[in-house]
Picture 1 (cartoon, rainbow, N blue to C red):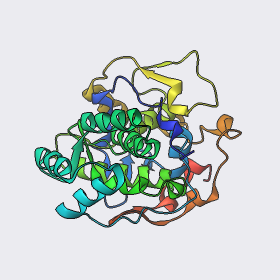
Picture 2: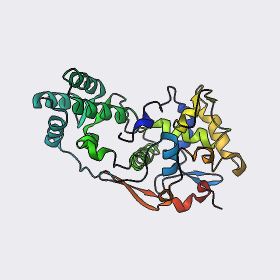
Picture 3: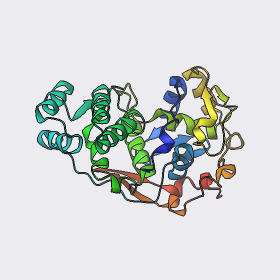
Picture 4: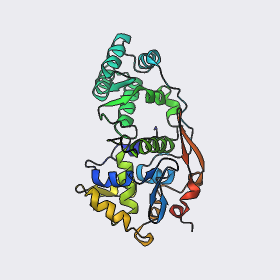
Length: 288
């Protein structure tokens, strides 16, 4: 119903740290592109649509930044928890976050009382907190994203592909600095994109039971961690013919191409804005 079904079974159980690190080193936050010997490439809206089955065409998320009081107000209003419980949870997390384990308790309590709207909000926040909005703790999720689910009638009308891509760009920009030691965001999206377009890089196994009605990242399964040094050498010697630029043609019946993917301007998630410079990576759309 809410356009998030593709996230249910998309995540890789094993992430290839060496593979991800080597690509993050090539990221330039000024253009939101990977700078490679053959030119620039990036994660696009069309990639997100195919890899995760998230919708592109709909509205940006406009929630404003929350202060301490508005965080508690949002928890009380949306999840119907006691204000003292909300205060204790946010104090325990030391910021505008809640624990995923706490959300599971809220969900189970709402189900036991047959309060399905509350259970749905808790479930969906938990889902995006484990996937497209994953943070470095791997145990917390920002209450900021609960705003997506206050009015469930509007949840479907969010451009989830834009939201996921803006968040991924933000985290890649942060991680590209030498002082940053961890990557937040949905690493499955980045790793799936590498598997799909760089067939000679990384250790992966094709899933025998994959079907085209599934998100395309489910076509692969990580086998083991690749050496960061090896991936660097492979990227240094990369040639154009070893890259699959247009790899989703067989998937178009399931996810038709959206021309808005060529949009060139700013993407937005709340107060975050990130450049989407499609004119720099036209080969990825089949152009010269």
